[in-house]
Length: 258
Image (cartoon, rainbow, N blue to C red; front, side, top):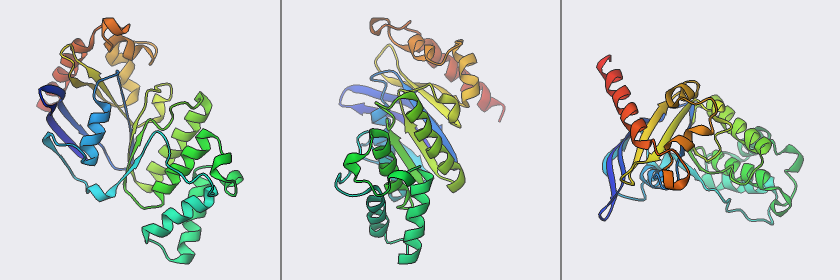
């Protein structure tokens, strides 16, 4: 999936500018950013629910599965039944195939011990796994997960993201995860940092592998990245514009060597 958004406006307000990124197949991409930087707006552009100046290419909209922060589940169904019915309605499988695929995603998402439990009895992390499995069984090639680890403790969050990353690699999905949790940053193949400029416009300050991100921002700890780019009136150091320019210069130099 290739994204080229020159700008996105809400009436007179410029919400996003110069968002040019590629989301590769078989890779997981983490999108992190400051509050109000346009993460939700970017997702709307990707799934086609808002207009913008630019284009998103190399994909088909019907191939996108969107997983929201709060799962929409029938709490009286069992975990296994919820996944089964989602697979049945997709009409992708014969009856024999469907039972095998359901078991595959039950196992892949670590739900074996609770598959017969009603969803209302599951923890928040287990419910989110069911929600993910329901989308995966529909055969979508692009997964967009919006803050699916919000409210989960560090261990549960790490396990959830690890499972989704593994499925991405083994099934060649294109997976985009929006999260405020950057503790697990090394689990991802790529990271995009979206910030709010001094003019309150969403801009990219980093797009690349996680192993280079600390050097780029000059930090020892991942959690200090957003502190640097947050505005001073939001408790940060107010360096967003500096890193926007730094990334723009880096991109231009890289393009000159291609």
